[in-house]
Image 1 (cartoon, rainbow, N blue to C red):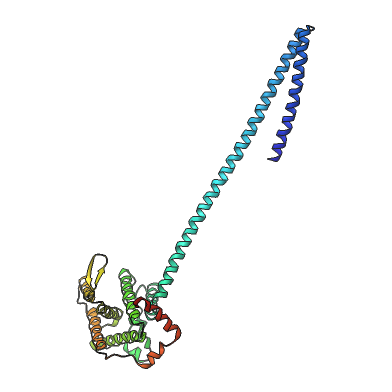
Image 2: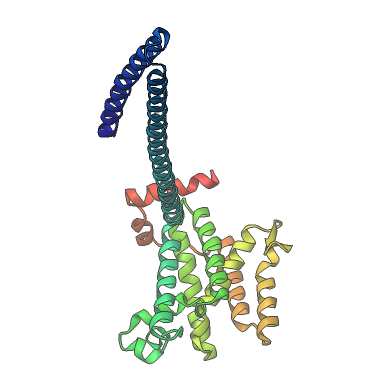
Length: 324
C-alpha cells in the first residue's frame, strides 16, 4: 500500500507539470491568433493543446478508477477476513458452551454423590459398579461368583453373604428405576437417623440377616435378595411417612403406607406370578418396625464407637440440617 501511495503522488506531480505546459501553450497560441501572424498555426496549436489536456484528463480518470478498484478489493478482503474471524469465534463459543455444559453435568453428579449419606452412597456405588461390570464382561448376567451358595460360603467365601444384595436386576430401564427407588428411600432413612447413624446400619443388618434366614429355611433361589432389601426399606420408609400422598410417575397419587403394596401388585401384573420376593421384604420390614417401636432393637456399643470420628460426625451433622 505504501508503494501504491508513493506512485500516486508522483503521477499527480507529473499531471500538474503537464497542465502548466498546456496552459502556457494555450496562452501563446491565443496571443498569436490575436496578432494575426499565423491563424492556422494558432488554431492547430490550440487544438493540439486541447487534445493533450483531454488525454491527460483520461489518464487521470484511469488512475483514479485503478485506485478505487484497489481500495474496493482491499475493503472486500478485510470484510471476508472479518467474516472468517466471526465464524471462528462462533465455533469457539459453541465448543466452549459444550464444555461448560459437560462440566455442569459432572459437577452436578459430584454434588449428588457428596450429598448422599455414606452407607447409601457406598452401597449404591458397589451395586452400580457390579452391574456395569457384569453387563460388560458377562453378557449382562450376574456372575455366579457373587451368588449366594452355602457350601463355598462355609468354606471361606464370605463375600457371598453380601454381594447378592447388590443385585437389583440386569442393566435395563427397570434397573434404573430400582436404583432410583433405593437411592431415594435409603438416603432419606439414613438422613433421618443422622443423630445415631449406627441405627441405620443395624436396620440393614437386621434386614439382610432375616432375609438370608428365610431363603435358607424355604430353600429359595437367592437371586433376588437385592430386590428383597429394596422392598424391606420401602416398607420402613412408607411407615415413616404415613398419611402423605406419593406421586407415582406423574400419573396418580398413592398414600405412602400403600406404596410397597403397590409395587408388589405391579410386579404381580407385569411378571404374572405371585410376588414372593416383595412380600418377604414387606414381612421383614413389618417385623423390624414393630420391634423398633417396642424398643427391642438397640445398637451395640462397638458400632456406636465406629461412628464417633470427627469426619463422620461432621458429615451426619451436615445431613441433619434437612431435618432440623
